[in-house]
Image 1 (cartoon, rainbow, N blue to C red):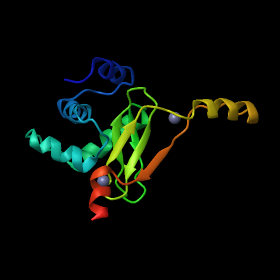
Image 2 (image 1 turned 120 degrees about the horizontal axis):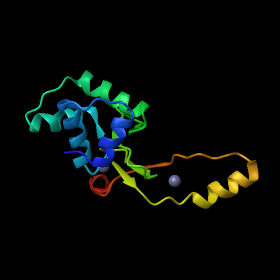
Image 3 (image 1 turned 90 degrees about the vertical axis):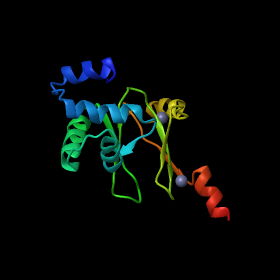
Image 4 (image 1 turned 30 degrees about the horizontal axis):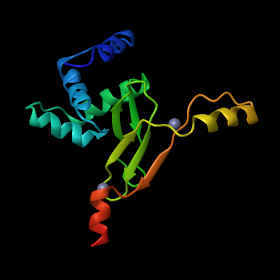
Length: 144
Ligand SMILES: [Zn+2]
Ligand SMILES: [Zn+2]
């Protein structure tokens, strides 16, 4: 089952809700973190659902265009990560070792945006900020 709100937004965007598509979204929804297409594919296999990687890619691209999914770039890996856009603005902590990405909802830049808008008369819509480093597990391994 996918979130009612998400189902509603898909309807508004004229995106058909097939069984396969709902399975992809359920996997993404159940994950606490953004996922790569490979991870989505593997999670589907665990549920006995086999989909082509290209089917998953195409669907995610469609959802990204409609702003229902956020595509996150990984600086040292070509594989993008995807997460359902629930409307919350967030930042990301990216591990350079295991490529794990953790979403952080707290935004420290709201005041900065305001003063920058005043200073430049730029009508600011959004910003992106990702922080790179080593997650606790990887940091521990590196210390050894
Ligand atoms: Zn790590
Ligand atoms: Zn922010």
